[in-house]
Image 1 (cartoon, rainbow, N blue to C red):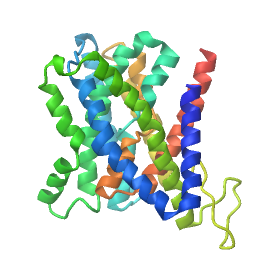
Image 2 (spheres, helix red, strand yellow; image 1 turned 45 degrees about the vertical axis):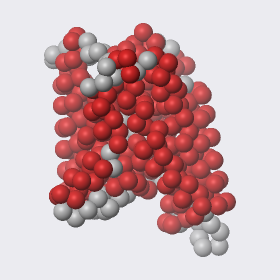
Image 3 (tube, one colour; image 1 turned 180 degrees about the vertical axis):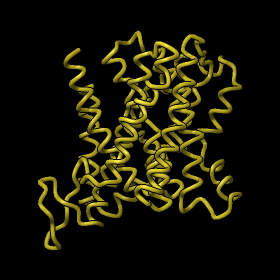
Image 4 (cartoon, helix red, strand yellow; image 1 turned 30 degrees about the vertical axis):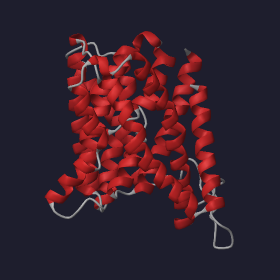
Length: 322
């Protein structure tokens, strides 16, 4: 857990420094990094972790409850965005995606291992693949195609963009029909190591995006002192709090796990791993989708930064107590 925290802080700091030093070159690198993650790094992780996956019937009902919680959270997030905050379409899509898409893989699995022990990882992996991954490939990409500014104008164009810009979904479908022999243990292990490469790369892009946002909006410095035109503004981590960021945090970190617990409690003894993963920060891949489809990337990066900071603090405390 400590190494995860140090990696995230170092990656964001490196991203902020790179943007301040190199400007547009750093921003271009962040865009290329997100593209590489989507088209090169994420597909093998999805494929080799889906081939041969066996679902234990004892935890199946918990996964159904989790899916109901995801759908209800998304509907509430849409209502908050359109009726409460009156956000535009790119911001609405970013808010809904931030609310329904937890970082179960890159962040959640290590936390489950640290807090509950490695014997709980099998349940955590089932949730990650069948709830977290499916939410990303179907829900998050669909919302990106529906609300993004670069996904097309007509329903047909948006449907085409959903498929053509969603290579992990195509890989996932291929994995479901592939025999186990195509996913030997050595490649499965290698794909899980690849997950740890995605973590610093993704948060490096977050740092660059936040630094660029500070330059564009004249954000406050980390000390809280407003910066004028005499000096370039500094990006802070997390970025300054706003109503729309606060709304996303409540939806992601409070409402989503609370709904899962409320739905499952009368029916089953909900695995602790499920509840922990439901309360994870907003997933990095939401930033990839925001870039691919034209959602509000700055908003998405800010929610990732804030939600990750909060869960990091809570996770470190829980690990120390345990």
